[in-house]
Length: 229
Length: 218
Image (cartoon, rainbow over all chains, first blue to last red; front, side, top):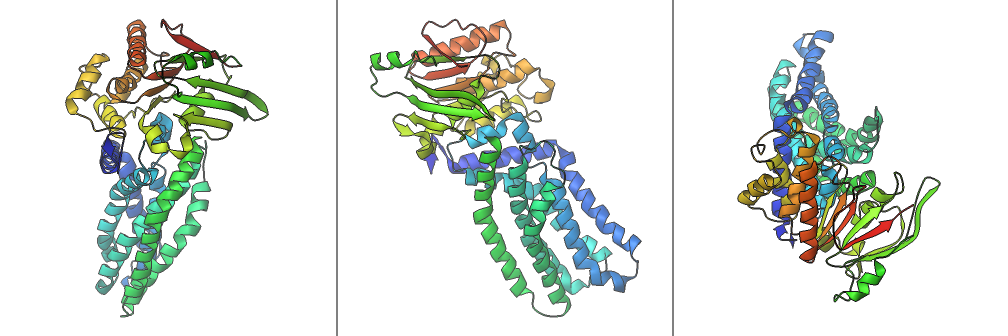
C-alpha cells in the first residue's frame, strides 16, 4: 500500500521506532510500572504469610492482578504526551490507515511495558512458591494476555486523552473489559496445577488476542479522532 | 463573510479549485463561529485567515484539514469531499498547528525524520540540510526541550522544506519566530505558491506577499 510516496509499512516502522526511542529516553515511564509490579507482588508474602503452601494457592491470582494494575499504570503514557505536543494530530493526518499507526504505538507500548513484566514473572512465581509445573503456563498466559490488556487499555486512553483530569475513569472503562483476560489467565494456571491441560483456556485467550488485534486498534483510532476534534 | 478569493478562482487556468469550502457552519457552545462561509483556494494562492481572538480561525483550519468534524457544510479537495479520499488528501496536506508536533524528548533530527516519514520516504542528508537551512545547524542532536520556543517552531518549519505536500495549512506560524525567521517563512510561502502550491495561514502578522488573499472571520 502506498500513499504520498511512502509505504504504510515504512510509516509503521518509523512510528514504532519513534515510540521505542521515546520510551528509551523517558526511562521513568518504563521503569515505574515494572517496579510497581514487583513491589505489589512482593508485598503478598509479607502481608499474608511466608508459608509456601498458602502462597502457592494464590500465586497465579496475585501475579495476574498485579500485571493488570501495572498495565493500567503504564497506559497513561500511551497518547498523553503526543496529544500535548501535537504529534497526535500529525499521526491522524498521515495518509496511511490509522489502524496501522495505532497498532505500531500499541506494539511499542507492549514491548516496553508488557514484555518486561512477562519476562520477570517466573522469578516472582518462584518467590510465591508456585509449583514448577505451572511456570510455563503462567508465562504463556501472560505472554498472550498482556498484549490484550495493552490493546484494550489503548481504547480507554484514546477516549480520555482530551480530558483534563481523568482520575479513575480509565480504570472504570478498562477493568470490565480486562476481567475476562484475568479469568482465563488464572484458570489456565489453575488447570495446570490440577494436572489438567491448559490448552483450552490458552486457545480462548489466543482467540481474544486475535479479536483484540483486529478490532481494538480500529476502536482506538476512532476514539482518537473524537478526542482530537 | 468576506470571500474575496472566489473571483480569483475562475481567472486561473485550473478550472477546478484545489480546496473548496461550501456553506460552512460551525458553532461552539451557543455561539455561532461562522455561517455560510464559502471560499475556494486555487493553486498558487496564499490565503490569510484574519479575525480577532476567538473568532474561529483555528477551528476553521482544523475543519479544512479534517481534524474537526463538528460542522455543517462541505469541504472539497479537487472536487471530491475530503472525507471520501483521505489518503490522497492527507498525502498532499501539511498542517502545522499551535502545538507543532515537536516532541520535547526527541532531538530535532528525530522529530523531523518521523514527521516526514509519515508522508514520504526521507533521505538523511535532506534532513540535515533542512535543519541547517532553518538555522538549527549544531542543534540536530540536542534534546528539543533544551531548545527555545522559536527553535522548536523552526523544527516544524524544516518540514516545509522537505515536504512535497501541495497544501500548507499553518496556524500562527510566526508567533515565536524572530525577524529573520519571519522573513524566511514568508519566502518559503512565496516560493511554494509560485511553484503551484497553496497556503492557508492564520496570523496577526502583516504578511509581505504580493498575491495575498485574505478571509476575515467574525
